[in-house]
Image (cartoon, rainbow, N blue to C red; front, side, top):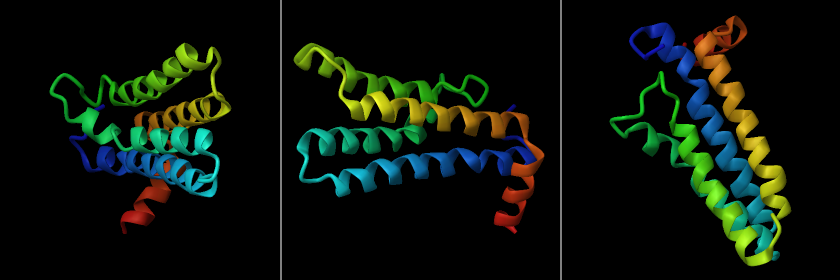
Length: 129
C-alpha cells in the first residue's frame, strides 16, 4: 500500500491526525502538570517524540509499506524508559500509561490507513471536501 492513488492519500490522512492527537495530549498534560517536574518533562519528551514520525518517514529506507516511522518514535520514547530504569530502577507512570496509549493510537491509525476502513474513508472524504 503506497500513496500512489487518491484513495491511498485520503486514507493516509489518519496518520497525521493521530500524530496531532498524540502531540496535543502529551503537550496539554505536560502544561497541566508543569508544577510536577517528573511528569512535565516526560510528557514534553513524549510530545516531542510524537512529532518525529514525519522525520522518520523521510529516511530513504523507510517506506509506507515498511511502516517503520512509528518504530522510530517508540524507540525514542523507550530511551526515556531506559533512562528511568537506569537512574530510578523503575518506570515512571507517565511512560507506563502514555507509551501503551500512543502505541494503541498508532495501531488504530495504521489499520484505518492500510485496510481503508469504509467508515474512515467516508470521514476523510468529507474532511477533504
